[in-house]
Amino acid sequence: MVKDKTAFYLDPLHSVGYLTRINFRAFSKALEKLTEPHGVTAGQWRILRVLWEEDGITQREISNRVGITEATAVKSLAGLETAELITREVDKSDRRKMITRLTTRAKRLKKKLIPFVVDVNERALKGISRKDVDTARRVLAQTYLNLTED
Image: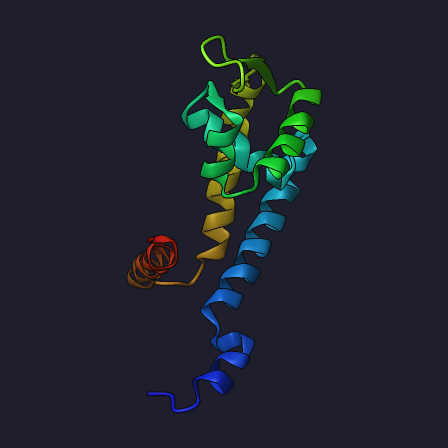
């Protein structure tokens, strides 16, 4: 057991939060290198991935699922709309809500872009045993639950 936890966690390589953050950035950068030639940034990718799972949801639902603020979502959605990857329309049953839908072009992009996720994950996990990968997934899922439960 570590006696001085403050000193221990000040070392960035002992901080799970720091390691998670730098890994997220590395994953995003590696993925964006592959998606950018198709006109999709890392931020837009995360939104498209949500919409590929469930099309026709509100901006608020998108921001919650992606884990970004609504203001950031609105900015990213504007870029996707300019790129003609989504359309936005006022919800007929609740005019305060904007419904976001994928365009045909965005739906077709899924087949091209999803293999990039496989590629990035395979590169990241190279040389790591299946058991260790399963442990890492379990640990990351639990840390998320620990930090988000009310």
